[in-house]
Image 1 (tube, rainbow over the protein chains, first blue to last red):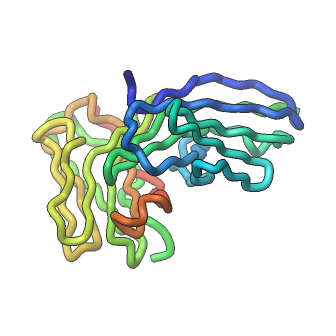
Image 2: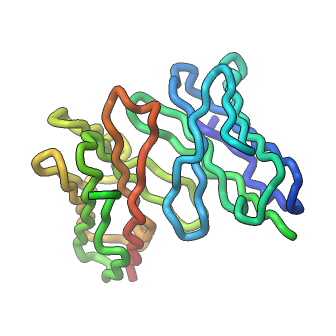
Image 3: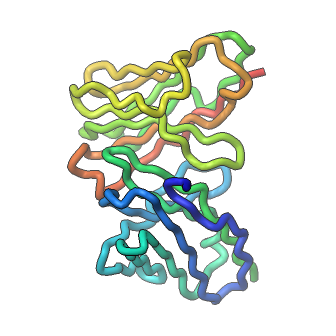
Amino acid sequence: RKEVEQDPGPFNVPEGATVAFNCTYSNSASQSFFWYRQDCRKEPKLLMSVYSSGNEDGRFTAQLNRASQYISLLIRDSKLSDSATYLCVVNRGTALIFGKGTTLSVSS
Amino acid sequence: GAGVSQSPSNKVTEKGKDVELRCDPISGHTALYWYRQSLGQGLEFLIYFQGNSAPDKSGLPSDRFSAERTGGSVSTLTIQRTQQEDSAVYLCASSLGRSRTSYGYTFGSGTRLTVV
C-alpha cells in the first residue's frame, strides 16, 4: 500500500461548483497533515494544514479522520484560478510524504 | 533571503558527468529538505538536514547521490556519473525545524535537470 494515495483525476468542473478530493494514508503514527497546491511546472505551495477537528479557510475546508486514516479537501464555489494539482501530504517522522496529487480543471 | 533560492534553474548535462545543485534556504530555517519530482510523478523525498544533527539520508536512491549543508545554511546536492533516469526537477524546501513540522515547508522553484 502506498504511503499516501489520491485519485489522480482529472476532475473537470464548471465555475461555481463544489468539488471534494480524498486521500488515504498508511502510517498510523503520522501526526501532521497538509494540502499543498501545485501549478503546472511550478513548485508546490502550502494550501492549508489539516486538523483533527476540521478546519476552514475561505472556500476551502479540510477534514481528517484518524480512525480511517482519511483526509479530505472540499472546495466551494470553484474559480478558474483553482485549476491546479492538489497534493495530500502526511509526515513520516520529520519528513513530509507527498501523494501524487489530484488534478482539478475549472472551466467557464 | 525572502524565499528559498535554488540554482541553477535549469541544467542540461551529458550522461556520466557530475552535477551540483545548490539551495539557499530561508534565513532562520534550521530544517532543509531535498525532493525530486520526475515527469508526471509525485515528490520523492531524498534527504533531510536539521541543525547540526546527522542528516536523514534514507531517501537517496543510490550512492551516486550525496548532499551536504555547510554552516547550517546553504546546501548542495551532488549527483555523480549522472544517468538518464536522474532527469527530474530537484526541489529544495526549508522549514522552521523539527518541532515545527506542523507548519509545513516552503519550496524553492527547483532545478530542472536533464541528462542527455
